Length: 267
Ligand code: ADP
Image (cartoon, rainbow, N blue to C red):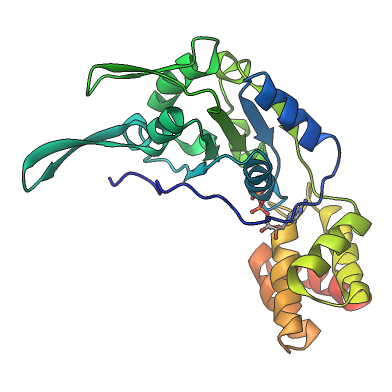
């Protein structure tokens, strides 16, 4: 398996609308060299927040989208074979440790369990990363910060994160923004008119009431932005909403009908 994306990203002016004290918390965690765990449903702004904070702190950011085949070697690095023989290639975590960057493990709960072995010594005051392959023991550069996120939605309840891992982090709980804030985000991201953005955020608030009953996952801010983009580019609202919301959220005909009712009433 190839190492995940490993070029650092410094996001130019990433817009982020705070929802509470998360920005301050992150800044203090960084100052105190504490790792951060961000919990929240999909598409609620976790990744955007980390991008924004990396930019604010002027640190490179290595983002790794975790999946169930992701191993410790994908994070740390591995020997590769080139035309001059074998050579070591750092993974994104190792690069971040060397450079004093932020390493963001998105949806960390998906990754193989062996990844926690490499995370642990980086999250206590030793801040070290042993590289078994090269025999090095890396001391993290001062700016290094480990950030992980996961979605505690019901599919993940069983998997959980081991207490021995989660108790190493400062945790920040995220949720979807309130209606007004979300309307502002939708308008900013898509260029849609404020009244239409507000209709979309009202629809989301109504559909999120269904979250625990009919829908596996509530509509995310991301979906609302997709819908807004389709509307801004000229699609009629009902067609945009059918594609971006109804069909995306469920395959169940009865639930689709309930969603259409909400959309018809509010859009
Ligand atoms: P997550 O990482 O939680 O799955 P993202 O950070 O990718 O979600 O958010 C999805 C999209 O929603 C972002 O690309 C951005 O357009 C928008 N978004 C959500 N919350 C915010 C916020 N608080 N400020 C700015 N944009 C946001």
